[in-house]
Structures are given as structure tokens and as C-alpha cells.
Image 1 (cartoon, rainbow, N blue to C red):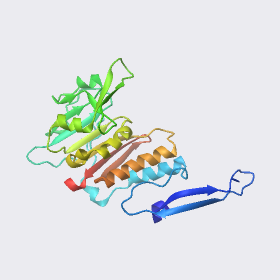
Image 2: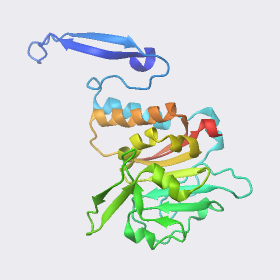
Image 3: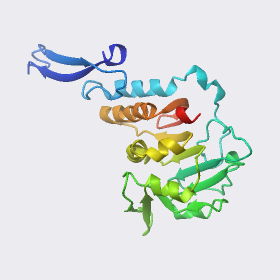
Image 4: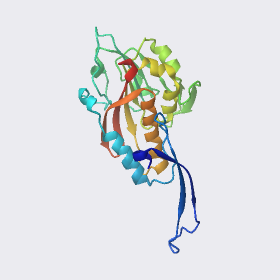
Length: 260
């Protein structure tokens, strides 16, 4: 009803005779037709985890016709999710890469050259394994207007997470041609901040994202993940390319339509 006819479920009640013995379970459902600009999903509870996962996978495997210009680039040694080669003029371009994954080898970001690279990672060892001078020991705060720290489970250090606005102040560029999120599952915590930060919409041309899913997710989480993607498209970023790597990982490129 929702995905084919755009009717959203707003209420449901049952006869309360829904056990297997009686086999006389009846539901009374109420629907409302949504407007074209709404992106919220129907109320959760009526889709099994398998159904919700299939809906999410369909979104990730559906590629628009205009996406032919975008292809997955060569895989890097540190498995950086690089998609859709940047089209630049006069070598003036900027890349912001935020990582919560621990690098295994030195990284010179050759796949982003000749762009200027700004690397953010709260993982201390990563700071020693990158060649760019613009390396900062910060992560992204899940809050729109508040920085805070969280403990690092591997040692006695803490991670400092800063707002996207503070991150853009550090970068200090007129625009960011590619913003790469590689947060090892932490991306779902920062998606609300992306949607609330106007500067992200005004400055970022493309977003490359590694999305992590956990085996055994419940239906509400699958639905929430898909909702983030749909809201992001309503925010102005259209999905240009996506690829499912395995059961728990996908890489996705969003392009900011108003800036292209």
C-alpha cells in the first residue's frame, strides 16, 4: 500500500483473538495518502526483518540511468570507499575523509590526487600512517551544535567528536568536492547531524559512504536506515551509485544536485 499507492498506515487495531488456536484474527487498519514531498516510512511493526531488509537491498541495487558516468574506482590497500571520479578544473578540489577504521599500511591518498586532502580520524595510530599534512584527531559529533568526548575501548584515550560546522571551519574551503564517511558502523549516529547542518548541504558536492549493517538487525533498524537514505535524497543529495560488498557492507555515492 505504501510503496505502490503511497498510503501510509496511521492506525491499527485487532480483535485480540490472534493466537494460533482461535485463528480468527482480524485487523482494522487506517491509512492516509501522503504528499509527494514526504519521505517518512509507514509506521513500523508490519514488516518482518526479512521484508525490511529486502526493501533496503532493492534501494541499494537500483541504479538510475544517469549513473552511467559513475563507476567504482580501483580498490585501495586500506579499503577506502572511493566512488565516482571527481571532475575538477585547474586541479582545484578538496576532499574531506573521515575514518573510524584502523589503517593497516601507509596511506598517501593517491586516488584523491590532485585534490587537497583533509583527513579526520580520532584513531591515534591512523595519524602516523597518512602522508597528508592536513590530518586532525577528531571524529564527527552526532549532535548539531555540541562537541563531546567518548572513551576509546582499546586504550585509555578518549575520542573528541566535533560538530560538522567546526569541521568545516577547520577545512576552511569554499566547497568540498568529495566528503568520505568511513565510520565502521558509526555513520548511523551522525546521519541526523548531516541532515541538520545547512553548511553540509551548501558546501558538499558529493558524499561517498561505507554503510555497515549488522547481521540480525530488527525490522525497525532496517526501516530507519532506509529512511535516512530517503531523507538524504529529499535533502538534495541524489543517489548516483551504490554497490553491495557483502552481507554487512555497502558503498554508496550521493551527489548534491543543486551544486552540480
